[in-house]
Length: 335
Image (cartoon, rainbow, N blue to C red; front, side, top):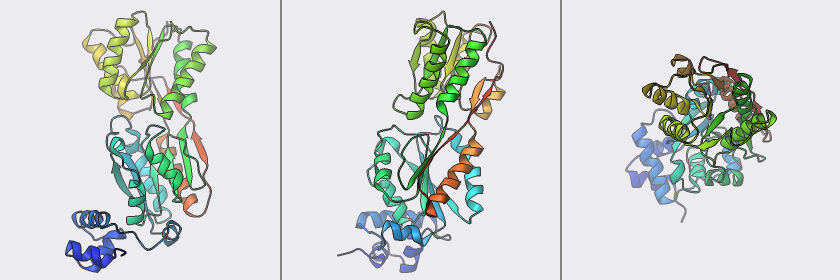
């Protein structure tokens, strides 16, 4: 027998109208009440009496923003993109609801449950995940308008918006080379991430063009965190003390390394030059101000919302790449 809203109301000891409002994402419903209703709906196996296509046609004016709950340090760009996403959505009377997902404990079907139970018109996946993550497989199977950042999951209903990571890493490495450095190390993040592989591609492109050997350009793998950067630079100094410059695949790793170097009495950039990636606003307040590749988060946030609205209105999926910019800071010296 099909589970109805009345069954959920009886289970929760609530009125049918309250349950209906909670399921539809209406304002005026307490978070505690909404959570209880959604949990009961999932427990009872409630499925809205609408196909995915019909759900979209209702145009609830609500969209979901999905982030990995373990991603705050590795992916701070979310906080810079959010106001631009909201502004672009508001121009068309849409509102956003933020959902956190446990990326490593993700259950197949979780995204479909969120979209259908809350009657969302679509969603933007803000956190990068490993390329083989089940969330991406689910997106490929769905017919919900979806925008994915920093990964390629192109379907009729899914658009992608990415920074040109190859170009960004090339720019950072080329800057070090132009400053006279030949002993350049690269500390990358998670190898399973598409953006990590693209940043590695950009690094290799620049070093190969300059005729640098693999011995001159060691590659280390870390985890996009400050602590990871600290551990990596310690390992680098032990294994490759001849290194004169380090390119970190994000700013948090670079900042962690600079903090360790300061404690160890190793001056930056006089003894070791450092450049990061992301353009996190705190980098400019470091001593010295961090050289970095700036991701255009305002443009990414705005364009992500626009791409989603295009899909909601019947458009087809596409891939957009945003060009980054180099900020030279004062953490790199010329040899």
